[in-house]
Image 1 (cartoon, rainbow, N blue to C red):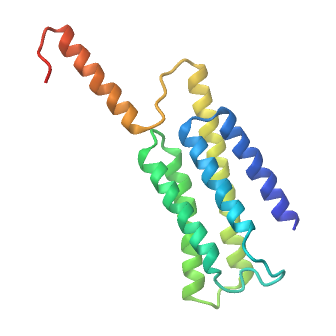
Image 2 (cartoon, rainbow, N blue to C red; image 1 turned 30 degrees about the vertical axis):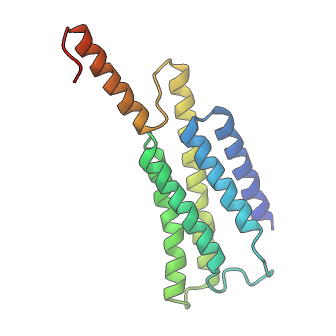
Image 3 (cartoon, one colour; image 1 turned 90 degrees about the horizontal axis):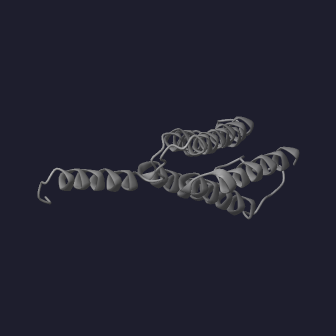
Length: 168
């Protein structure tokens, strides 16, 4: 129970930091992580029997979280979501390993599936800190890749107009 409370405290602190200082990708990832944690907490729990077999509701939650993280990774103008998505993909694969080979010890399944969340939280903290540092330095920061592309197209259009060229 202590591990659950420690994780909940770390998750809540990380997500509050992301909501306060992060950009849109950081806030989206924090919301996804909180939603998945709450959904996992609401699953029926039989003390002492968790992770003795594959819990398909937990697999569904982790797979949905993976889909959300992939969506953020593909659209965010940051690299850190790719790494967080990779760590979470390992968690989803852990469920697959347990489903394939039930001889995997429950303690190993528990530790691998649960402890892989901590590097992801650390990556979120690093992403928020770097985003905030870039903003304080006055750098132009885009949250999403389409914003960067739109700004580049706008700059090319302005350059073309300034050079006396026609609009494309």
